[in-house]
Image: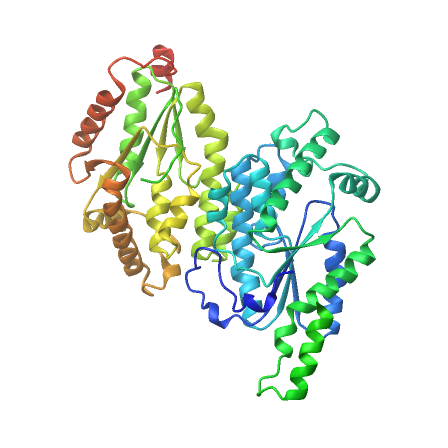
Length: 259
Length: 237
């Protein structure tokens, strides 16, 4: 399990953004990642009120929701001429706009930012389409290193049943039809999503994902997410004044219980 | 040298670069015309012209929403779209593609805006390496004279007003262009630009460009490079 205490303060992966004072960022950045139809938005719908109940101000954001590029991306996806590099660049534009105009200001104000997907989805989609990984990692290197990344993991068969039951139809882009992964939507979905899952798996270690088994019922997934998200907030509860012996013993016992 | 992808042709990619008012657009138009009349199939691509991102760019500019990073990325998106849909397939078909501005414009402008030099060079790694890159070298005052004399009012981002260099738009434009010029100058060797002295007459500059094109491409249309019916080309020219 990653030690979230080591992740302070917030910083970038590779490249600093011009004009950002990283030491000002107070809030928490929590990412929910995973493939299409794995249930990310359902979980976020539960996590947000739960965090608010605990007294945190929460900003939820997600891909293609920027004021700048959200509309343009949706329109571009309506046509059939969006190439893989263009799509990647467009998503990065959308991400940069949300990072600088929503996420960073919220963190500066001490807000908990809960984001549905992050750069890892942009990277995974590009890599699954055959784009160069090192290129992608450097291009997205201006992203903040989140306090925690929860990777909702499921197999392609689980995704299929959720698409069929939940949505009733396969989506053009979720099936990777733009790059010809298969002759029909089902075959294409299986191949493309399998490849996406492999890419996500390969990102898990280098980017410190905490893997959450998303093959379980949503309620169970929610319980384990709550337990994991709680740990992100632990450092705040540590006493600032010198530790009293009794408190120290309690802390050790509490740590032992958590182990 | 940034690691652009090699142009596996058979077409040829010619680009022109330089600050505003360097005269590069006039020269690439003349060169395209000349190549057409010599029987080449010529296509043209201009910086920031993809219909796919047009609305987004317009919205961002109008509402002054851009940061240096998102400004850089939306231009990379525009470039990627033109590369994937237009430039690359045309080069595969054997056309001569003439581009008014290329990735180097981003390398100069975005860096002046404060974007990391290595980051923006990596961003454009999907670009094809041009067969010929002309740089129109001009003193700042000459270029400013051409721009500030005739044209309509300067625009916000064009003048670098987002950098807060000066509250006066002309003064901001001067400082901004001066810095971009500095970036271009430092790229000449790194990028292997063919430098054209843009203080010379239009005719003399064009003569020099044609000489370089003939030297690089040869007198006869190379194999695989797409030709056009000369009579048709003359009619349409």
